[in-house]
Length: 352
Image (tube, rainbow, N blue to C red; front, side, top):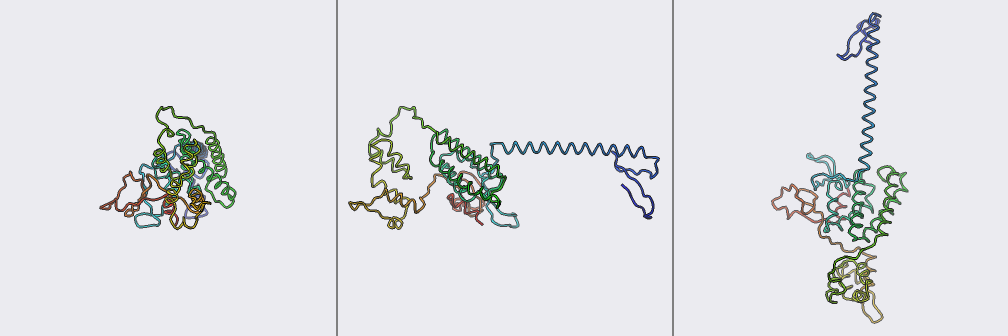
């Protein structure tokens, strides 16, 4: 590198980089051989550094590819998250839905029977309207958890219909969003989303071809119980479609599934008296058609949601957590500051 002295007309000094650092060389040709050797060494070092950086970049791309293809979602050790919607002196930024989705332990929640329906409903709400707000890591965890849910249904042969409806809703939502990719609606490459849609179709085919195996136990069957016990069991069902499916098993259960009192309690459980009065349906004999009223009301109003275990929000410290998960609460009585959240309430926390 040339260095101009105080007199700008002077030839200046020549410097070369060596292992011991930068050294000055004479301007004449006496050290031309040394200078050429130094330049050759520096050139070789530059080539070596370039090759090393290329190898590091190649290894990084390979590592990223392996991470993208992995089926293990990333979760934090803490199973709670502080929900904040603005910057403060203690915390900067705000909490997003994708961040909360990554921090909460949904992977273990689907294994718990009490939380399964809650997680499925939450996945359904995200599929309806929150897909564009998910980051890349949140998308990856969402699809991995959905795959585990499908695999659990295939193994347990239970909750087939709700998962079919979830996959159908997700596929319809993605079809509508992929058509608007020119507006950058979804985060990520369109080829990744097309591949995910192919996986959804494959999962739907697996659920369509599932065959329910009869249990091998020799215990008493439902049809062998007295009619009063059968009717008591039917009253525990909260979905009218399950009640109709149960009535199709045999004629005896079919006659019990048409009980007017059973459908009346089901209507009163899901809907208010005002809603019922707006949709009254009478038979030819002047009786209320509770079964027809239930399906008519279900098309007009949302059904009541009830879950065995839900996410909770501490109003004192603004921490979102599962009920059996400890969180660092500073309140004197933490139980009085805790409120249960429905899946829709969880989504509303992140609507700024």
